[in-house]
Image 1 (cartoon, rainbow, N blue to C red):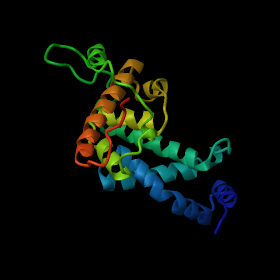
Image 2 (image 1 turned 90 degrees about the vertical axis):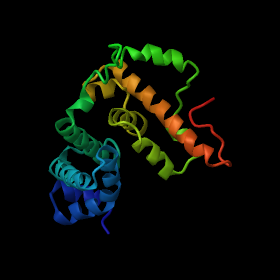
Image 3 (image 1 turned 120 degrees about the vertical axis):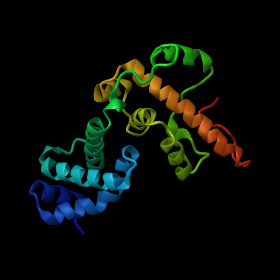
Image 4 (image 1 turned 90 degrees about the horizontal axis):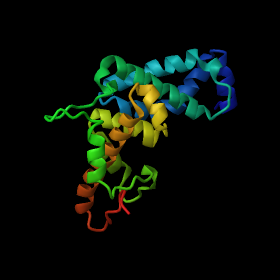
Length: 206
């Protein structure tokens, strides 16, 4: 079995054995990343192949400054976002929704902030009362626009400024989507918790 150093050296030399070893190690994990952004499994598989093609052709750009896994994941995420931008451009629109009163999603931010004045944003990774399956079920229940921002912020650790630049939306809009995503997740997981008497309902609450 090749070591990571041997795989890196081989991939930079476009060695087929090293590329296969890299794929074997990371394909499963990166497929899961694709599925975070693309719900259709066949499309996610195609996206995975496109991502690895970019990884192989750009491997000389990996300088070892960060982890290899992190570098690979960033390419997969960027490839997923590029795919979404072409297929679902509405996800990248700055204005999410206009209500019957003519208010945009950003206009409703203040209204929501008042309504949820006691809402406290906490680190998603601190949640421990739910299984991974339940957490992913909750995340997948989110509307696509909210899910996209939540994934980038809570899972990929993007800042709101990075999300703003990546999705070409305002920072305020990014904050709006994240707040709505967290509120939706809280409600969804509360419903799961109600069916599990032994689990205290502590998700994202004081």
